[in-house]
Amino acid sequence: MSTCLLHVPTGRQPRWARSCFLLAGLAFLVCGAGCGSKGPKNTVSGKVTLNGEAVSGMVTFVGVSGQEASAPINPDGTYFLPDPPEGDVQIVLKGTPGAGGKLPGVGLPPGAAAMPGSGTDIKQGVPPPAKYSKPNNGLTFKVTGGKQTFDITLTP
Image (tube, rainbow, N blue to C red; front, side, top):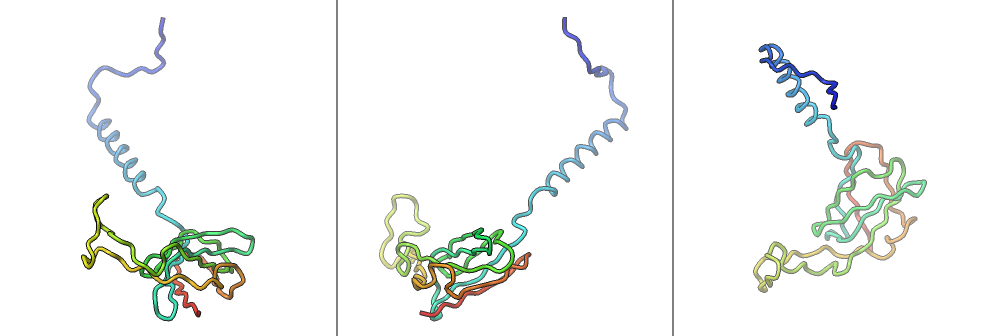
């Protein structure tokens, strides 16, 4: 024999009860849509250049206690680093294979070949000099929180 602990009336609910239920549901939806994560709390973005040319590769911010945050450097030299370590950081830059060349067939369907001069190739930035690939290379920044911008100008 089954015992039901919840009694649901079978009659029609009064209008005010339906209105309260509807308002409660609406409030839940609004709060659910607005109470979630709104992205990273702290960010650093900027552009990495060498002799005025965009640099491609990876940028890594290394905090004083060794914590790291990395992000790719786009072909135009821009980067966006979410949630970097706060405080004084050292910046490490590493190239990626093919930096300084072109990304063939960007925007083409899989398996399609880019035709020379078709405008589908995107020039990658130049690789960063090797001296920037380890900490203590002279590149430092202070992450204070919020949205910050830091352009990194390299020397050969």
